[in-house]
Amino acid sequence: MSYGLLKGKRGIISGALDSNSIAWKVAQRAKEEGAIFTLTNAPLAMRMGEINKLAEECEAKIIPADATSVEDLEKLYAGSMEHLGGKVDFVLHSIGMSTNIRKNRPYDDLNYEWFMKSLDVSALSFHKMLQVADKMNAINDCGSVVALSYIAAQRSFPDYTDMAQAKAMLESIARSYGAVYGKKNGTRVNTVSQSPTKTSAGTGISGFNAFYEYANEMSPLGNATADECADYVITLFSDLTKKVTMQNLFHDGGFSCVGISEGIVNRMG
Ligand code: NAI
Image (cartoon, rainbow, N blue to C red):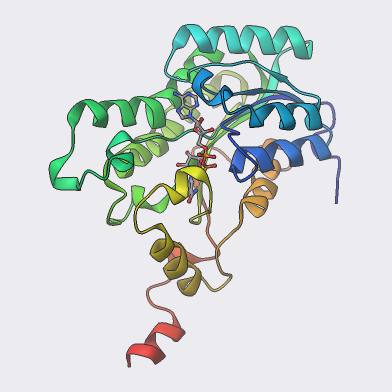
């Protein structure tokens, strides 16, 4: 169902890799709600070609950009403003990658070059996206920038390894840049801490099924799906949340507030 929440708004959506991606669902919902936007992803991800289907469906231009490259991001904002006919109102950062996770390196045997890469791709890129936009004056007054996070920023989870630090940094950047951007032109900056979700990045973590089932069992509302995450992100892009900024917002069916669920008590008691 469409509410026209993003009618007249322009945006940039990163991170749509395939139809499971959270960003893919956000793009579909943004289109439904009346927005026009560009899609972006790392040049490497373009090779899969899936994003072309989404671009066609959403009538969106694709502008490849490695989110760790300031130069690429400058071209992304310049190209988006030119194509969309003005500054943007919303930006989605939906980017994460850890070579340590991909190669199954345990937390007590991390490769530090890969660790730095995880931080650069998964967290610092958020600062770069914000700073480049800020310097280019690319975001309209009262714009909205959202990045996706995970509760491993606050609590330990086996096998999430260096991504836990990346998410902690990501959430910290939202607070620090939110303070700066809010003062400048009312742009809000938030992170959404999402339930485990069956995407390419999610299922790449060993033990993901246990994360997923455990969170589902612990959460009174069950795990939030990628579609539900997209709904929530749309509200944050809309004018209905103009005073929400510098927050890490849990979108997790209640998981973050539960100590133990009744089901687990009954099973273990
Ligand atoms: P996904 O694998 O579909 O998306 C990750 C995206 O990051 C891909 O499109 C990939 O091409 C992009 N990317 C990687 N390196 C890049 C670079 N250098 N420049 C630009 N883009 C790059 O998986 P998903 O789950 O949709 O991930 C999106 C975000 O949601 C990530 O930040 C992830 O950590 C976060 N998240 C995912 C959860 C899950 O369980 N799937 C739970 C909570 C948060």
